[in-house]
Length: 104
Image (cartoon, rainbow, N blue to C red):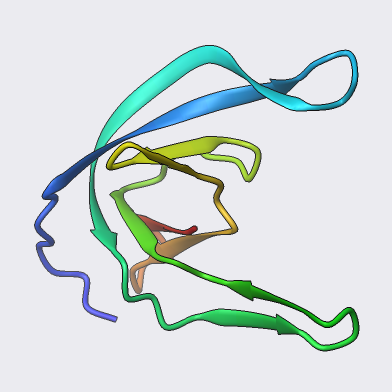
């Protein structure tokens, strides 16, 4: 894992969600924009054999520093909406969070 300077060529928005009376996630109007790096060639695939389902990861977003993001949020990338599947803080040798990687 290389923690050098990364080009932040993309801008995405994160929309917060809340549950309505029926328990369905809906956007609550809070939207933040971030400069990020988007990689569509993520190598991670989670396979669930017991249920017979497969979760395919279509890409990864790399944020600079620690970002408050939840799995119920909506990522708006290039006009398409995605939900975060896995959120991983990436730390340096001192234990400080340098980047946050979100798989979608």
